[in-house]
Length: 320
Image (cartoon, rainbow, N blue to C red; front, top):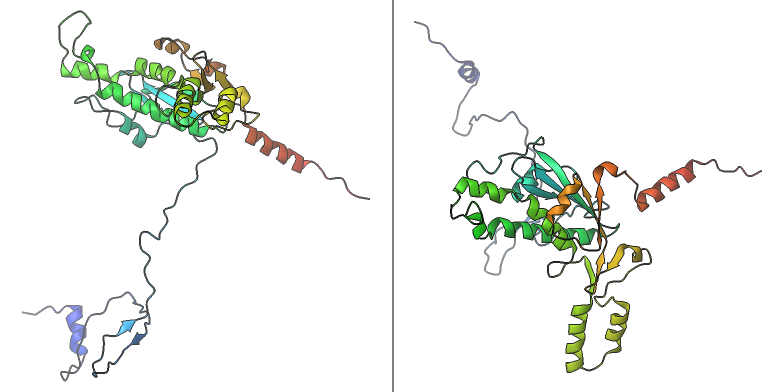
């Protein structure tokens, strides 16, 4: 009977091992590099030696590391896109003309089993509208988007007794699935929210440049406590009491309403112009357009860039 010897054991048998001072160990096939560090030892007066210290660079704490902030693209916040589910009526807001699945699913609330989609199917979603603000007013658009998201959450969580019954006059209660489907259909509420927020709904809404009612209340309190202030009177006459500095080009983009508010202009582009009738009324600063009648126009910054390229392409006169 022959015994089979593995090749590793055969190689070890060829080595001459003698003495306890010599040993064998398996080494890794990867090479290791060691960094040289200088060690220093200190002796105290009592004759004891301290532990060696290595000269290493101090590590940066998390407070010293500044997070990377990605710069925003030009025109960020000037357009707000609203998408609608063609079957269930769910609505989603976006700052991009293309839906992002990760961000869109976060806006859809769970109202029951099989009522929240597990993924975004692009064949079920269509653009409902687009809100367009003047150029260089992206902060106004971001502020309006925040108000619209807050109104959407109120409709989905703080619903009234009308969601409990099938009809207004009947006492027949809805099932959990039927109530969830009705809560998913936010198309009419979304259009009504757009009309209300663009008209100045919500505290701190930046679409309002100035409000004569709040200015009058603030001036009355100042007169009672401090006295007359000439700066307040000047702001009341100019209509810019909120401290907003307007350029000459911004004068064409503002509208004064009958209730004493000065608002930024906004344009709502519709895929179906009949959807605007979901709102009872629209403020004076809002104009309506249809996607099919629109055309792409370059912005002022893009026009300046194109003109600069055309000038650079023109042949330079040769000096004689």
